[in-house]
Picture 1 (cartoon, rainbow, N blue to C red):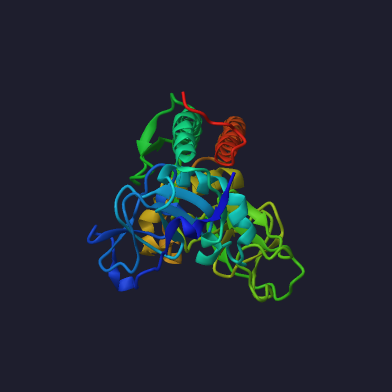
Picture 2: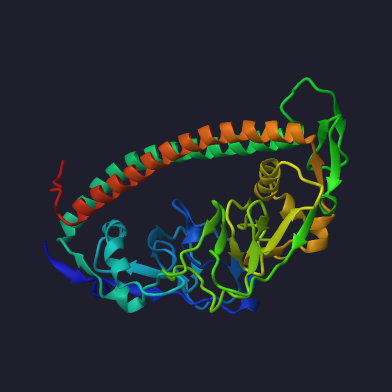
Length: 399
């Protein structure tokens, strides 16, 4: 099969981000896409609009993510303003559908060109100089038609599996919310908690303000001999500072202490941040909020971990925040946090609820992990089918 550089059969349009005063959230102008997170797996999903775009990808153009992550592909269903994370590709001397599949098959090649410390990225030159398979026009059309038939079958299976994951995750969140606010005994007498997001609680439960149970602590460690902890949506993790992955600080000496059973939360980002009860001794960013039970107010750490994480998932913290949410800066100020009201079951009941949720969520997460593994294998199979077709390893003929 013949090969050619991508730049000789397409025109490339590397995105450029507009100035902040040109962006709005009122659907005025052209929908703006910054990167892969905006366009997902099916159709682009813009969250902001641009009144004076610098770069536009037109309907039918192929969108290629050129950073964080590199290689995600979609097709414009209308005109879009595109930012620096995207490259618009217009098929000129190549079948558009064949080109669309081809770009899905060259992710590894693209990644080999990527550079960056905070995130991987490739340049327009990297994309332009991709060496691609280039069969004749008839064969391109046959391959595209073959993949148009095969990939929807795989995509349908993927969609079904993804729906199962979403339903299980939704069930898990509903289970947690019900248990931490209503308890486990369905026959117990209930009362109005006086807090809208809590609703009715068992009549023997109390409600209390965070400040009457917890204290915020900020203890700067001053040395660099402790593990550095990151707050992720998979919980607190020990960061590998030797690998240089992610954003790195020049020094960790000004980081704050986190002890076992301290709670740590990313109060600066109420959309994608998280909170966890630490199983580690370590240090974390001075920008995070670390808090612990007041002396003499010891409760069940695990119960409150579930409760606080539910407040993230169900946007309870978000309702109390302030800032610019569409730019990921929606913060929960300390006074709002400390004056927030929480349910307070008896400690013995907190422990039962936590043990119940440990068992239930472990089983649900195991099911999710099994389905996720199936999804990954199916994605790999899809990638192989596309790669083998566009590179000629599968002989595609008429009929």
